[in-house]
Length: 436
Image 1: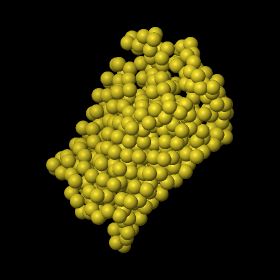
Image 2: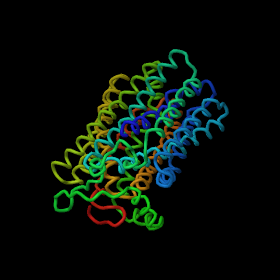
Image 3: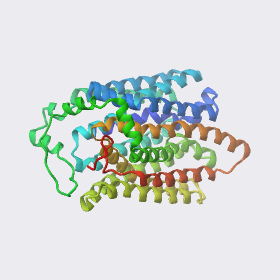
Image 4: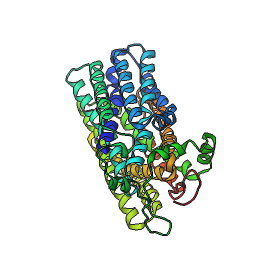
């Protein structure tokens, strides 16, 4: 199940970020400016932001099996629309709809983790999903840059990428089941293991009697929406998660939107080389995410402390990332900059499983909604940063400005994300504030 969900995360990035690798090609073909391309990348994040909570609700209401497959088909057709559109307004609408349908990816994935994965393995499991996202992003940059360099048109590339999501949806719906007890390959021992509780306050581990997970879905509706939102507003940890999500996403968004064009503009390299160098920080995030999952679970087993495992890991990793990102501005070539910034991105990746596991801890039985709210904060960065960079790139190119300022801003994002983790206490649930 983890492999299936991870593949969905990777394949979704084919359609999400192919526009970034084809940025300058689309500009020449359709006569769009940097600011207009920034708007196209931003509007995806607008749709992605608006439907985070509805996407999580869709998974709870209709089951993760139907909801995930349905959304994958829809976002694939939205990308076909992008491949066909020429007018700016049509491109804008297609990218907006792509964001709407991909918004359910993260909250539904988090719900699947909660329903299928035992507590002690959620760090590693979430690391595979977050790593798969960066695998998809890196693969998209390399493959798209190479295909464009070979003379293939961006419209044909977009269309072929869309077929992957449709094929995945068919396979997922055929094999997957919303609840593990409904899958014929899951036995009673596995069901018991899935429902094993985390460590109690006195440090002991108890095994609770297995309860059908359908009851968990039903009880979510017993908490009214306004009470749930009020609980989230009153929870400092929720605020900390949202702030760190914004700044971590801001750092990552640069790699998957404007870094490809940054390398072309600053170092005047070809598309194949730009795609390869653009993939380095994304691959590093993959390695960091997998390592972070192991670190999060290991620290929890050794210390018995969720704060050390989650918040401590994130504070250290994001601080190191900030310093290395700042140092990348002092390099002298595109390769040197990409390598140093990739090492920093590795530490950023280490913080990703900490964010997922802390959100599951705080969200409890409302994990899908809480994950959606946290992800909305990250989406806000996806809305603002492409617009900011699109306009800023135009200004720098027109005035021969300092490109290093873009890198310094990138470093500030990671330092700010590290500071926000001070507010996060994974021992308190969003619903009742009691230690868990």
